[in-house]
Image (tube, rainbow over all chains, first blue to last red):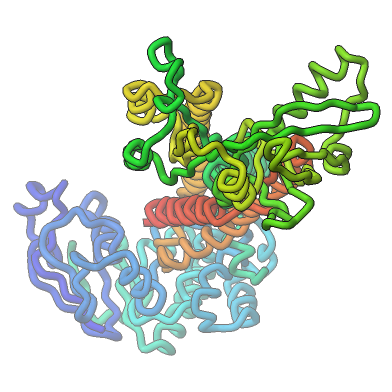
Length: 214
Length: 397
């Protein structure tokens, strides 16, 4: 499934972005399936806005976003739900966990949509990212770094063709960054999926096929 | 409950307490119960007034009319009889469904009774078409040569005897069954040309205010012993009318100087008032059921509003509006159905109670609610479920 952006520009920031050079805003861009793409976005350049727009959460933009043949501008709630369930996964910058559920339940509620992988596999991944011992702790009681790893695992338990990540390792130490990065790459490869990672500064988390300046 | 539903339950349904849910369900139950009760009230009145088993005491759809005796016509008996033309005119009057002629005897009838109740009196007899009798006794037949004559007397006669005459004269009061067991000796015709019969009371009538004999007897007596000089034609007519209080009908009676028992007309007016009251009750019940449905909808909307963040996040991680809508519907609809069916059962119990207690008053009610009540219940149920489903769908986007 190809991602095509055609002259998208957020309406609230239209005046600012129209005068600035960008590899993404107000231009035509196509990303092929399986590509790992890094979006370098200094503060205030619309990194989160971009990911929310291509994930279909925000519709306040001009231009068009196509996931394969699906035009996000015209997609209904059911089509969006299907896209997010089977094709498109995301790690939000603000994580967006359910505070009333435990770490495991936060992942489980996503896994139960498809049951693409088993519960045991999830438990194994939690151990691998060193949050197995927090399995039954409420998400609201976890540190931000632990929550970040729960959010990453939640994004990995579904089948997907594209994974969107918004500053996914910002609160992880080097060791945990390494563990999380390795798992993400492994699962993306297993799914044959592409990845769009947006961050403030350059990084070498993945062998990017493309780097875009926002 | 499967694990997914368990988690959704915690995210979407926990925020609003169970006591609020119970209160909303009680409101719904009360609303539907009151609505069904008012439909039952309307339906029972309708059955009593217009149904197949309509009760005369309530319906008053049968009335007897006669021409007014005035100073001008009091010397001329023929003037107070109904001609064929009069009968046709009455048959065509507004609201008149059927007309029956009440034919009186034109021959002497003398009734005697011996024993403690001994009396002897001239007895006027009348006959009406059988279909105008409220209760047709099984042995309601007479043919020339029969020595026993069945008669039906007005219930008012027995009341006058029991409550006015007997206490004043120191005589025993009589029950209907006792009166039916008594025999009267009737002397029919003149001293020279006549015969003796035994009259036997076989029933009582609320409709006709006199003594009724089978038509075959009146015709026989009139032709065998009747005075040929007296005029023919009925002196009274019995009418079946759709609504005796209809102003067009009462205007017709006034216009032709016909008189009837004004009590019947008055009761009909009361019936009209009852109809209005029942309709008013129905309107009120409709408002109550509407309000109770609104309460349950607001409760559901409050539940969803309190779980808005979870709901939004669920949609963002791939849950579809249809999955979430179905989940919420399957959580709420069984409770709503339970409240609605309990209300229906309570209304049915009320009907059963009314049917088993009211017959003491001489009124017969069906034991179970009829089609109209079922239909009202189905309409309320469909409206409720559709409204709730729409509210849920709207809330989950």
